[in-house]
Image (cartoon, rainbow, N blue to C red; front, side):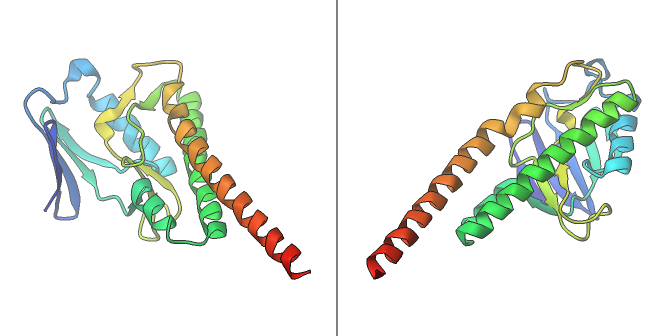
Length: 194
């Protein structure tokens, strides 16, 4: 079953695996760092912390990974809009916690292994929250799009850490405004009853 297709690749779900087949001009080249060390470090990080799916195999034009068990931040964010404001706030805190736990674990891995493993394309579509079927349990951030993971290509992590700060800030300000409006309405109602 085709999950997604664009100018770069076709992503399919086949026999319990995710297969990303790259189109001409978007292949995985060893000169770009896609080698056995890259795969080994991704799989070590996946085994230790559970934030990446395991790479089963990769070739110049194909990346085969285990299936991710969960929902994307984008899906979950849309679902949260149907919740009460209090539930939206709690949900938002959980998203932030999952993201920063991932960052802490990735930085810890890089320090312990004296390397630089970085995901260069973190966005709400590439970040999932695991469900109870994930091998490391529920409520964990999973990052897909593993061809955006670079090994020893940048040595001072910054942009991948800061990605969602602006998005989180906008969401936090929106929730804060909604909560303040709710509190003001409640106060007006209490004052009008007196």
